[in-house]
Amino acid sequence: MSYKEIIWSGLWKNNAGIVALLGLCPLLAVSTTVVNGLGLGIATILVMTCSNAIVSLARQWIPREIRIPVYILIIAVLVTIIDLSMNAYVQPLYLVLGIFVPLIVVNCNVLGRAEAFASKNPVFPSMVDGFMVGLGLTLILAVLGAMREILGKGTLLSGIDLAFGESAKAWVITVIPDYHGFLLAVLPPGAFIGLGLLIAGKNWLDQRQASKAEPVRAPETVPAAA
Amino acid sequence: MSTGYFRYSTRLALVLAAFALVGTSLLALIFDATKGNIAASEKKAKLALIAQILPAGLVDNDIIGEAANLPPQKELGTAEATLIYRAFKDGKPSAIVLEAIAPDGYAGKIKLLIAIKENGEISGVRVVLHKETPGLGDYIEIAKSQWIKVFDGTSLEKYSSKDWKVKKDGGQFDSVAGATITPRAVVKAVHKALGYYSANREKIFSLPAQETAK
Image 1 (cartoon, one colour):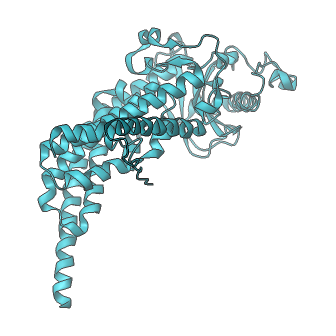
Image 2: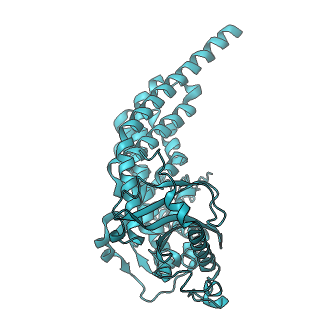
Image 3: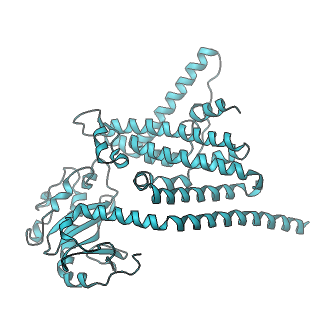
């Protein structure tokens, strides 16, 4: 697999959020605002890049039969180390991302990439894969967060002051002034509806692309997963 | 055949154990290396939270280091031991900061941090943890609205028992239409905490400081 393919697959073709549909639990719970979405996204990128690197490095010592428990062990150790180090050395960032980091242990994207990619590929491509899949998820989280924030609260970037201090309060964009909020967008159903729209949008773009290139091709089916 | 199978699984178990050993040693190492920093930053975060509700002029002692363990109290709604912070000024008790739980929020428990001055007047209240409806009941958070400051300066002397209610129930405290259950729970919890303080004032200030603060 070339780097170009890895990048394209992670960001678009097999995007974790809208194609693979893996790790929906944190995705739906956390995408209430742009800042929250980006927070979980960045933490996921960090964990996936590191876990893919370690699994790839250790792959020749991991017997096939016990690979899953070993992966889980590696991911759990890694997440705990990142959690502790962030808390100790970058406290302000930890206050924002801290609640998301433990969520990542149970994010099946991380395990999925370890199994599907890092266990069969050298270190550097594995890190690129982890980074790109994480980035693809981050983009979806940010877009979904923006949709829900604008519709639900009429703002963008609210909560940014938690990451950059009081002065960042000025960065909050009020998209709709005097907005009274639309609760549905903030609550979990809003996340499902928003995600559904994003999936539909991606499929529509793909189909349009396909029909331009080759008018009679059947539409691609979307693999569903838990 | 069966011995081969046994030896093979033993080998797998050993590999797994080796990974576990490396992993846990690494964790122990990192935990030890970060322990001091984490304690320091947690203390700083706690101090910052307390500073929001307690004027610095009232404190000249190590308020975190001299905190005491408080067993669960029915009036405070606490089910586990909590920390209670005592502020002193020139050697005299000046205020306390305690944790209280409002058990009857719209979506479960609401955890509060309440600062009470020595004379029984509320210095400030903050909601530490809640699950109230976003955009509706969450105006009790300081990040969302200034509502929680209605308690500043109130006391058992200022309002009688029947005034310690939301206006909708005939009391003194504002609430947002459509979301009265949440403030009702908070008002009730703050009222009870004041009652607890006035009944236990002496005891609270004489509690020994916990020893595991390090």
